[in-house]
Length: 148
Image 1 (cartoon, rainbow, N blue to C red):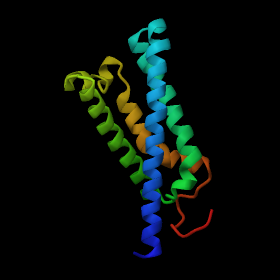
Image 2: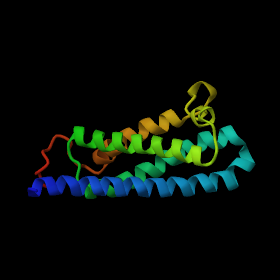
Image 3: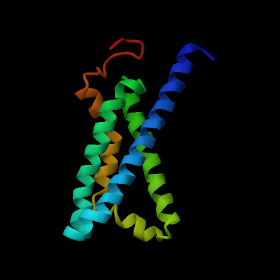
Image 4: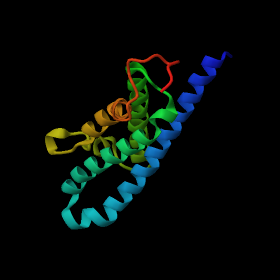
C-alpha cells in the first residue's frame, strides 16, 4: 500500500474518531437537555433549543479537529460531512429501535412542518467540515499535498 493510500486511510480513521466524539458529546448534551431543560421549557422548545446547541457542539468539534482529519478540498470536506451525516442518521435510527421506539416516532423528529429541526441538524452535520475548514483558514482550493 502506497504512502498516499495510508494517509487517506489515516484521515478516514481520524474522521470516524471525530464522528464518535460528536456522538459522545451529543449524547451527553441530550441527557442534560432531557434532565434539566425539558422539564422547565417543555418538549418542543427544548428540542428546538437543543438543535442549535447541538449544531454549536458539532461546529466546535469540527473546528478543533479539521486539520487533524486532513481533508482539504471541498469534495473531501463534503464527503466527510456526508459520512458523518449518514452515520448519525443510522445511529439515531438504531438507538431509537434499541430504546423501543417505532419508526414513526423516530422520523417524527425530522418533520419540520411540526417544528422539529433534525433535518437542519443533519444538513449542518453535512456542512460542518467545510464550514470549519473555512473558519480555520484551510484553503478548499488546495491540493491534498499542499502544506497549511
